[in-house]
Image (cartoon, rainbow, N blue to C red):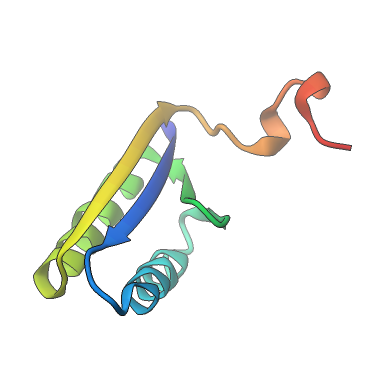
Length: 91
């Protein structure tokens, strides 16, 4: 089953950028996922089981070395910007 996951990571420390960038780079190493990044969150698109395995591993990795909060949403299907109704696509 295809799924979409949106993640926001909030490290509770001064070097927060390093933690966020490291986390995103680890996500991007998985060639089974499509990863899109913007200024507020990171979106993962792909197989539900692959997404869950990746976030389970990478959330734990962040928690082992940092104090942090994750906010994430899951949706069935690939909710990419290309899949938006034509009226909602930016020009």
